[in-house]
Length: 556
Image 1: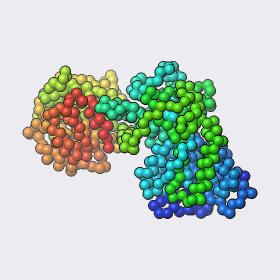
Image 2: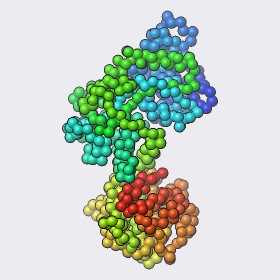
Image 3: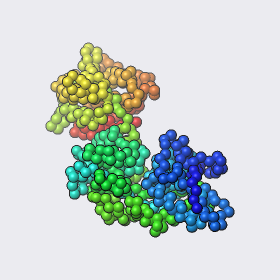
Image 4: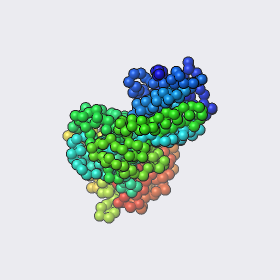
């Protein structure tokens, strides 16, 4: 027989695992909620959790509690497997709880966790290795798989047709694409890694990757489920989005009047692998009992249940038959390395924060020098406009120009536009329009020497004095040379002032971009280091657009 109880949490720390008595044990859902401060969604049809004990005829001297956390997609299958295990005589009180993998991972990292865990991706278990190396988890068999596909609303499916577009063309073209937040959703995380890998490692690819991440981060959904909900409400205007094949198949079964097509881009894709994992310090008796549920999941009946739910076998065979997806094995991309994954997530986290930036552009006479068919100032102008078109509309940007006495006798800088939201109304257009016009006019005003130090310090002080929390407040200065203002402050005076005036409560990120072989890269690096920023140099002026975008991606 079966009875319902709240699943029990297992407290784990650097000390040996401690078992809590029945009266003092919290439900796993409650532990997860306390650990991560977010609600945990439960999917049980008749209660918050399910517990099954051995049949009355079984010779059970004791019935240990075995808590199993499972990704919501596979919860009904594992629930059924636990019932079959108890029916076969397993002497255990199995508590099966559906919970978001990101929440379980956070709870385990905080010292609370189940005895066994079925997440939707090995990525979550791998994450624990760095978050809690003293308390490892054993990754066992994968119980199912589901490749990541690009779900296509009907209008977009008709546009794509039978072609297999590349990830790059889908993300940089005119097709609207949205994705789930990779910090909380494995589908979004795998899509992020796949896209980053597909774009390549060239200079141009890094520029595209940065711009793509900024755009996608501003429209990211909280979860894959949110993207499906959006499509259900607005099937004719929703964007394409990465999703698991299983989720698309399930959605189509439940929404026969507004089904989704899907495509796997030409480069291939990644897959959710649903690994069975157990705590390394789990008692042998509990491990044996947990493995009985795993055996039921991997049985012929369990495999049939998983196939009926829309999953493929662990090796990729079988298919729920989604329009546009081959029924046989799909092409998988090379898995990202741990370093590549960390880099992609770090960049994603950084670019999600809105930018509040003062751009400071060198308009000294040396900027007239030719670099190929165009002058340095023309290349700088093109780079600035490209960057401007990359920024989210929520960004705030201001613009100064500098050369000796540009703002009048003894003042090397001049404000062209104050820091304002790009969408702010300026005249008959927007602030972005005004900035574009100012950048375009710069090549006609080049003159004077490079008044670098005075201009940088003034810009730093301006942004600091108008600091706004909730943004990355920054100064981005582009120059092609060295300081040439003998009447201004010295390098040492600049460094001393920056060191003295840095305020951790009002941090201002200083980004310096050098253009051409006359740039004093060593001095720029020293200034950036003192200010707590970064410096970049494009020795070949033709590379300035790529370097400029790369610099803007550096926000940490």
